[in-house]
Structures are given as structure tokens and as C-alpha cells.
Length: 140
Image (cartoon, rainbow, N blue to C red; front, side, top):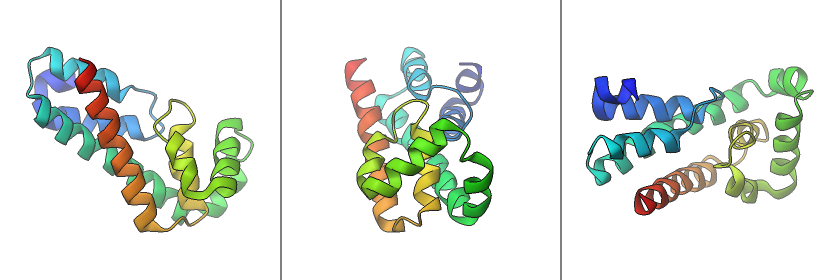
């Protein structure tokens, strides 16, 4: 909450960016925190979506550029292994689970590892982030 209080929408964007990486923080909690601070819902949706989308894009390119490293080093990790298996088996459909806690971040990395089509990845991943935050804001 301090990031959001201190830096406003930019703090929300930075926090949701980190939440999309393997840093174990909740972007939904950040969105709810921003709303409780009386930030404008449309601006919260925009900044949270931008931050989280940039985070998953980073994950994709990490997976794409470091595929051999990730496969060797992290294939022992059961979440990454499961994410990789799901992504190889179901392709873009695996992205439907990319918003879930724990396995979601590895799925976005695995999408890069398997060289998923960029346009498909970006459109699916970004649309899912916007939909998730719309739901959180609507429920608030």
C-alpha cells in the first residue's frame, strides 16, 4: 500500500508489474488498495493493466531468450514443469490459466519457451489482465 500511497498510479503500475513476475505479491490486493484510497476506478484499471501486461511481456521474452536455461535449470520446479507441459499440450489455451496464482507466472514464461506466436500471446495475456481487473473493480 505504501507504494500506491506514495507514488499514486505509477506506484500501482510498478506494483502490478512486479506481481506479474515471479515476485510473490498480489496485484488484486493492490487494485483493491488503490480503490480504498479513492483512486478513480477507470485510472486504476488502466494503470494496473499496463503494469501487469508489461510484466507478462517481460516473462514471455525471458522465456523466449533464455529457453535453454529455463528448461535446464527450472524444469525441476514442479510449477514451471507443469506450466511448460500445459503450454506445450494446449498452446494458447494454457494462457486462460495465466491469471491464476502460483502457476500463472510460469505459464507466461513457458509461452516464451515454446515460442508461442507473439500476437496470440500479447492479445490473450493483455485481454485476460484487463478482464481480471474489470472483475475486481466491479466486485468492489
